[in-house]
Length: 567
Ligand code: PRX
Image 1 (cartoon, rainbow, N blue to C red):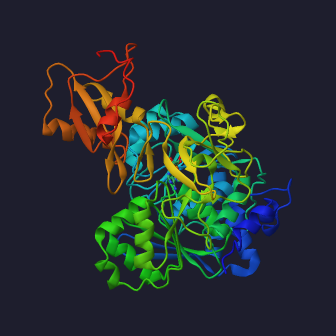
Image 2 (cartoon, helix red, strand yellow):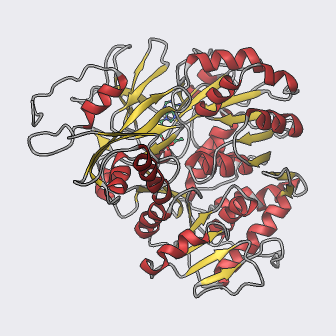
Image 3 (cartoon, rainbow, N blue to C red):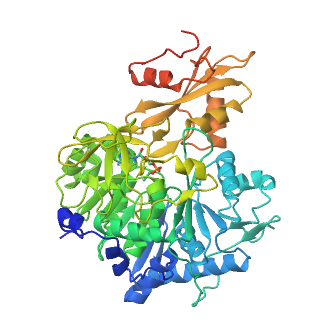
């Protein structure tokens, strides 16, 4: 029997206080995610249960029980407090998927800090704009990533500490640098958890928009209510589950479901800190007897590409439930997974701003391959007309996804950017910026984004950020960045570039520019293709018309070009 039972019954009787009661939370009392994910599970008698089973790229393993999670996060919290870091100051986590990332996250929350996870493959420019916007007080990192921080240290007087978790004891550290060895650190049995409340800030995640700088999505401790219950009802986490969430906590899936949802439900979760390969993934599932697997369409399509033969080498019979997030999950992938694993991947739709799943397929519900499913109980979602902002009265029409604000894990604002936050609401609806239709049985069918943001392999990339980075290259005069179709990643970044006088397009220049962007931003943001052209299509007012370049890449109608400069 699945945790959710009957979806229709749950919808009828739903109230978020179901989760509050299960978590013994009384409105008005303190609520701290760090405590709920470690101390509370120990108090319930599961201190010796494995919480985190971690495997590195060399196959090395580390195991932590819930009691280890509790003590180690106490150690992190104490260390930060002793450094003088105060509640609500931002503490960035800039690490690979190592245990210190998961446990450090809980430690920051326990001392009342705001956890700011950033993807460790970010280059110095991507890192700087996000730390600068957040005015981050401390960054916790590994020695392999420290050079990227050192490069921008002088521009960040507010960054008081760089904490290195694997510092070499024989090497002296520079000013503002400090070593913290979690394994060796003293682990306080008693740690006074900062009394955070429902509206106390907890996590700051950065997401990309079409224009301007990345936006810092502010979440609060009350988000736990949504993350706990969606994990229980959609991921169907049960006491005996061995759970694997493949997402990196640099992104929201890796925190909402790779940390908070998993640990607050007290399951055992496995983490693989290694690059992707079909063999390695199947081996990992077999070795740890994974029962619940939460992944992403790009990974699933890569597994499809690797073929069915490799699957036969492994015993994957432990798998009982699969789910996916981040990009459209095409029907072929759902049908394929049912064929090879005996279960379909259930699609779930949400975003950094929503903090938890909004529209999903539920265990036990009829699955329509290619559909995102139906709204989670307590979520009022529909599709509205993009001009009147009114819901359509009939099924089948394509419009903007619209959600009634008010669920527990809704972002509270964009950090130092309230104006952009307010623009996300129209006519009493929150607009995630996606287009969809709803069929007559109430299933949502994703159509596309309503902006120019590129979704490559489930990661959002801002064309603006890539264009700005390109302009810093000495050869580049102008640039326009659009999505290009790709079988595995759905979309990849493509750049159109005009060169400054004296430069000529060549394979070498192409590679040089690609690498330039990779180092500054990240491998995800690096254009997979650069096309050198003589001039970019622009409006009469000089604005680059990405729409035309996009349409060309996708073989679509170009549409209205009446404002084009040189038509
Ligand atoms: O465009 C939607 C797409 O990813 C966006 C959210 O990206 P991000 O904030 O990085 O969070 C990703 C993980 C929650 C959405 O606005 N997206 C997410 N899930 C789906 C999706 N597109 C289609 N189908 C999905 N299931």
